[in-house]
Picture 1 (cartoon, helix red, strand yellow):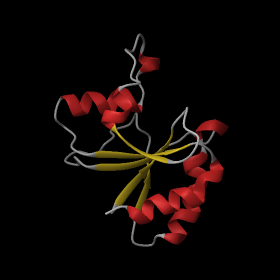
Picture 2 (picture 1 turned 30 degrees about the horizontal axis):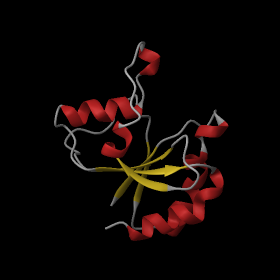
Picture 3 (picture 1 turned 90 degrees about the vertical axis):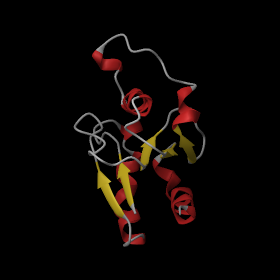
Length: 123
C-alpha cells in the first residue's frame, strides 16, 4: 500500500502530516509513505486510487474523507493561487483520471494516535 503525505514544513498549521511521518514509517514498515508536493506532477501517471494524509481545516479530529465529501466545500478559483490540492483532485476526477480517493484529514500534530488507528483499518 502507498500513502501520499502532503504538507508545508514552513507553515505550522499545515505541517502536521509531515511531523507525523517519522513515527508512521516506524509503525508501518509495509506501507510506502511518500511525501509529495501536490503542485508538481501529482498524482503520478496511471495511479487512479489514492490515499492521502493532509491537513484539513475545520475538522476537530482525524477523519477519512473522499472527494464527494470535499466537493461540498469547493470554491471556484479566481487566481492561480487558489488552485489547491482539492481543486486539482476534483478536476482530475471530473476528467476520469482518478478513481477512489481517500483523504485522511488531520487537524493537528497531536492526532498521531488517531491517524494510526485509521491507517490500521484501511484495506
